Amino acid sequence: MITDYFRFLLAHPGRLAFGILATLGSGFGQTYFIGLYNAEIRGAFDLSHGDIGGLYAAATIASALALPVVTPLYDRWGLRAFALLATGLLAAGAVAMAGAAGMAGLLGALFLLRLGGQGLMGHMGITTMARSFAASRGKATSVAAMGFPLAEGTLPALAVGVGAMLAWREAWLVWAGLTLAVVTPLLLVLARQHEGGPVEVAGPPPGSTRDWRRSEVVRDIRFLLLVPAGVAAPFAVTVLFFHQVPLAELRGWSETMLAAGLSVFAVGHVTGLFLAGPTVDRFGAGRVLPPALIPLALAGLALAFLTPAWGILVWSGLLGIGLAFGATAAGALWAELYGVTHLGAIRGLFQALAVFATAIGPVTTGWLLDAGLGAFGLGLGLAAGIALAAVLAALGLRRPAGAATG
Image (tube, rainbow, N blue to C red):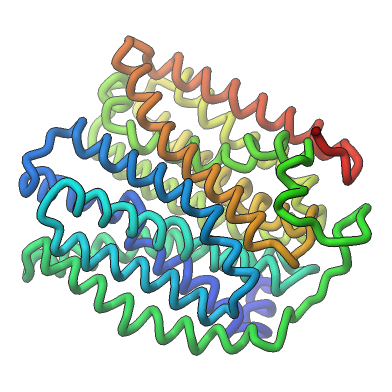
């Protein structure tokens, strides 16, 4: 399996490098990176934890609402033009963060960072892989997704190094310059690899004689039934890691175990990506998605029932594996079901729903924890919700193509 991956990488280095660089570059707009400046932002704007959390949620939800408007441009423009848009918005957010003087400026900066980074950069990387490959779509999307853990492992350390030399506002100018001077030119060069069209051309979606439009997809009952399963992985990971400190306190776990859990999560994520790609290629994204949620449900059960300190290692590893399989299957699924002609618009709609879910998840979970819900209740509820999402996905996939609501 590893040999197949290396053969695949060697056969298409430029095309795959585009996907990896796009997802890696999205890191400047991801929660873990922006969160590194939480204390400085709160101090500069005299914000409480609740204040900045509310602003961040508002900016993230606004970016989710903007995605269905912006992502259809991927289907209409060339890839290089869309790459300029995505990196331009990301760099603009970084510049805005450096110069933000009030609440409106801070909100605008967060919106641009979330839209350009978490939204468009990640969307562009995964969608391009799903469009360019057919038989190897699972491997291609999983290779592109490697950029996410690569960014998680490198960008925070880079931020610490820059922070030792520069003030936080100046650091954001560095990130803007890095995006414009390094990420953008490389993406434009690598995008030329895709100008000749897909390297593997797929036929029409199974059971269909045409590619679907987004307006048709939103009326397809299959899409509605599959969305909960598609967003389950990012939702579960965001909720559990956002609240990992209070959950650890409830269990009596130390900060050392929290750090160890993050390492195990990273190992599980990368290992899962290597396994998920060939699995999706062999069985199809639709058949893989429902069982791909099993590790996520088990992670919830581990949180609920494993009280020893090593329990965090179990649910962190299961989360990493579940994220890899769930995201890879979801990344390939929409092309498999609906074709690639309007894939940018279709995946953009799904991406918007995923971003919205990750925005409201930490807030609603925080309310539940404040109301007295413990680790047991949260873990059990999460496992039940994920199991329900898997059942809905299985039911949706059994429906014939073209079954639509309304």
